[in-house]
Length: 233
Image (cartoon, rainbow, N blue to C red; front, side, top):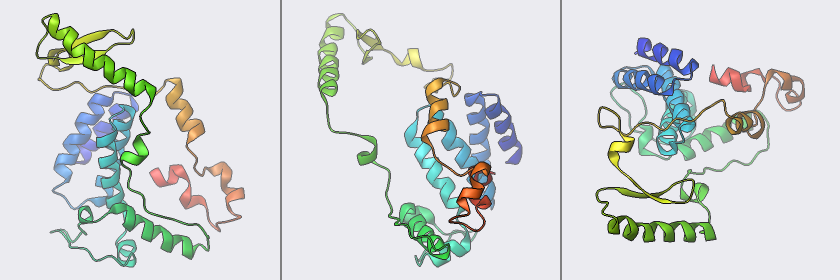
């Protein structure tokens, strides 16, 4: 498992998402049969991050939620007050309950220990957080796709999907155009060095760093364990 994991890390550092993903998935397949919650947690977290970079948000969410389950400590789970069934390795079956509620309860207990008066409520990421009310764009786009079905049919196209390109032209998309040599849909890659991604990491995500320690001591006696890089290891 660790051999595959570290190979994945090498390709991850080289920004080769496909190779990293391939090795991580091999490690995941082997690791699922092992009693290695720490490494499985790191593995799932890395897979989740890779899928985010590729804008594949559902598998990213699934792996990040699984990673959270592996990182939960036994004493935290016990203190949550929630009763679990346990698997053959003695780990709680976290898939049977809402992880948001488990983590919320654990977080409330931890905040209370730190004397921080912060309200915490569980929220499952879903439709309400990913979507907005229909807009004029949706109306125009869906109308174009609907009319595009007839347009492509009249032109003799069949067995394809209807799409609109950047020039707003209706075009046919065949599976052969998006699959690889093995018949699988090619992973859509995102350039993690492009401006919008770097801005998101630099400006839109807030977390503790080593430079924040002196200010953070106003609320925490020892803020270092809560720093972003320390949490990620």
